[in-house]
Amino acid sequence: MTSHRSSAYVKAIGDRGRAYKSDPITSQFRFIVRMAYACHERNVPYDLTWERHETMMRATITATGNIPMPKPLPKAPKLKIVSDWKPAIWDAVYRLDAYHDGTLNRMRPGFVIAHSCGLSLVHPSESGELGVTEHGADEDIRQNWLVTHTASGKGFGLTLSFKRATDALLLAASFAVDWTQDAGALATNPEFRRAGYTVQAAFSSGFEKDSAKRRLAELECAA
Image 1 (tube, rainbow, N blue to C red):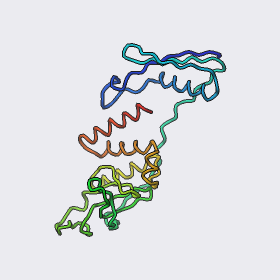
Image 2: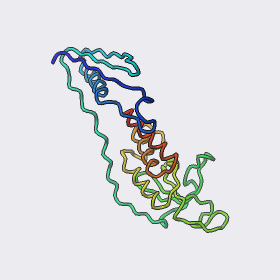
Image 3: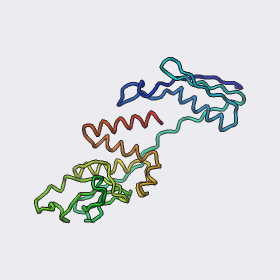
């Protein structure tokens, strides 16, 4: 095969279905991008043009020479298996820098149960005693648990029961993310945001859950 020409159409994000669940970019458009990349990689002459066609954009690639076979799209990374982890509330250790309070922009005290993956369960506490508030009143220690990034103390924006917080931590740990890295390094990993939005979509409620689902859909469209 010494020549190839194909076209594909792509709509603007706002025209691709519902706002919270956009229609994905077509396989044909993805093929155009993969073909252009394959030609560039093998120094095969090609021309990629864009034209407005009514409410859509049309991409057309023309190539001549030893036409390469585009590589298949990469498969989604398999979630790593996380061994069963059944922490007990009484495993928690009190720390003055247990978690980062985004409202006050400082570290605050609480009880911490750290997982080896680099994430932690945290129960905020000003009193230093489980089940006792800073004013000496009783509180339910099964509630009000956070899931945090151990190194930075920053969380997923969730306040959950102990059981749900444990499940949320294990879900985050199943992604291809090295949570032991610092926050800056994590931000460069594309799976980092996917993991965060997935956890929020699974364990948030109301607007937060819907917002996380929309963000996940946007990531899928951009992939």
